[in-house]
Length: 406
Image (cartoon, rainbow, N blue to C red; front, side, top):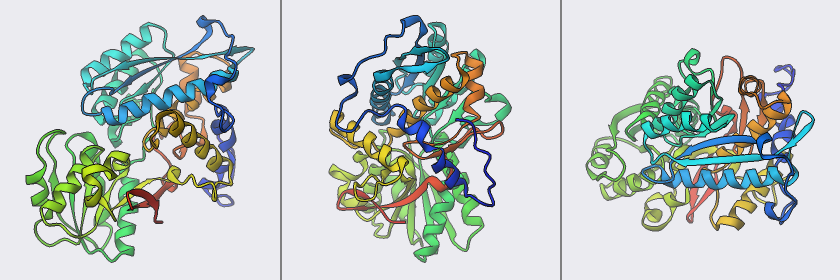
């Protein structure tokens, strides 16, 4: 969908996105209660398919998030293929080619070339910052549009070297600012930051420092977590020491829940604050449940899917996606909507371009202002990510569930 020419002084950016929501959200949604495979499939010849290559962390440190993205991709492709994808004068199918990068950036980079070689017109993947950055560099070499699912503001930078890459996750700077607003509302005066190693943690540390520098809140100390799977106790003890009212845990599941548990074991009794990467069932269940009860997280507002409040097109489509995902997989989608949005964005670009040409798909990606399942996106030639800041909301863990706070 092309960007609507609305005057920002009359309509908010959020209003523009809401007005644009219908095309992206409903194009691939099956009627509620009907599984996508129950309907007729497209009769498009296989050589006319929209082939989307996905390099995902199905094993290794990123597998908790990578498997969820694979499931969302398959669910959305099934929905699109119920009626087929109109591109020009043909009705085409969406065909997924999904590879496991094992959470290894070098493998992910090879996947970009391999998937393009077998005909993929676009790439999706990389739930870890490092695999996503490797895919972005490789996608640039093979001139294939790539939609990143990873956290890390530098994935799309420098922009002149990432002209084929678009990032769907929220930017660290936007999450940090929202956290600082929360601190101020709760009269938090001093915080420590416990950040994961790697690109995502680097972005979080940088963003928190900048956001806190513009506030009256002090940064007590910054501590980095070791790699996933190693012991977090020493890092948690350093973050919990000294004068601080709260601790920010900046990482992704499963590290987020483990870090919170170690903070409690180290004696921290104050509030814990998460970035969006923590929002997964794993964080609030099992051994983590007691440690994270009452914790806060900044996350896209897609968690609000109550039947009582779903009235807009965007809310209804989100509820439909969550219902279908939960029915099929028995768990809530949490992180999964990013992959669904990525595939829908590509489908919309193909419709608009009336072509599966990679260059035209890339050009149309940066002409879209849309409301997706996870939140709002407004790509442009000088902005390739991430999610719109006003898509973010604050949630609090209440009885083991992410509950809207603000």
